[in-house]
Image (tube, rainbow over all chains, first blue to last red; front, side, top):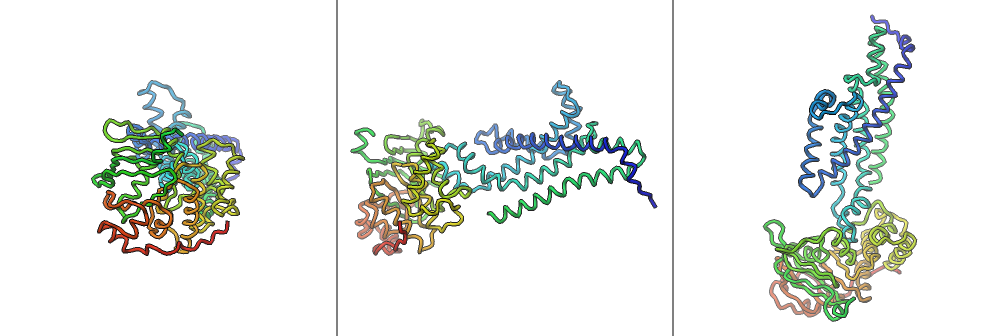
Length: 220
Length: 268
């Protein structure tokens, strides 16, 4: 029978905290950048200009249909050779995760926009609004409300995906726990603690999302 | 307003054509509406009357012909450049439209719905727009509903708010696209009542409707359309009471053509 000894992890607390800080900070960056890419992708895929539409669709499908782990490695090892730009592991992984998340955000945002009845933008147009005004004043405020639960869900996935950046030696929670596990010869305790840490952050978030979904269902 | 537009019609449509795919919905339509005139468009579904109405404010862009409202004229067809979005928006701001399904903005209160056009399109100051919006709501008898959301209103009230929203842009022309078709029968009267008052105030109106008795009372001209062409046209009473064409007679035989308007219970 295995003798658990979580006490041993206490001496690595600063390492864990450090890693957790990087993980959370990283999540904030890739959620914000991902949403920006998502907005661009969504508006691109809804554009009346064909070239823009095709570019956006190519971007969305390229990042939705390849594994994020492959993208991370490709951005760090292949892109610098192809584009001639050196990237730190942090930049490469932030870029890859933002684009990956952005492709999913795009689909959520696009779906939210097209779910609004066309009569709404028509009513805006009939009042004399330009398409941009109707989008900003009429369609988006309604669409965003519908998107929020799905966007929150995708952000939770983004948070978990940050664990992959450890393959590029970005010192996130997983990377630091690898260090601790090697040092202490206690991988079971270490990775159990890491799993608990992720869950401790995400479970409250999922509860908030579920509440939001319920509230939305009532107001519709 | 130029001298010329006083003598000529407010709306002038010439040789209008529109197809959706291989389906030709409008075939060479001509239409004139005098200033202050009320024209009713009737006909079976699929006759093209709603498409024609939507061509007047260019929500539907015609394939050929021309549309003039007031002093603004657009020509369509080969060689004609399509108007850009800014020009279109400016043009549409001068025409009000009321939809079958109201299309109120559900995320805004009744007051905000009516203020939206003046604030966003006419760049009116909020306080001034609110004054205007409250006046328009009072006009349709809904002043006390200003702070409610559309979801809490009855169908008839929603449509009256939609009329107030269109009127807040102070349009030259009002277009009604089956404004009472989605309403429960007992709510039709209050909407027709508002429309009738508007007509008597001299608003130029084009009304797509199935309310034949209303058209007979309120419209001065009536146009019967079928399969994308104008079959019969003339003074409303004359066409309804004494239709000349067989298809018009057949269509009108489905309706009660006379009688009082449904009672309106709008106390305003």
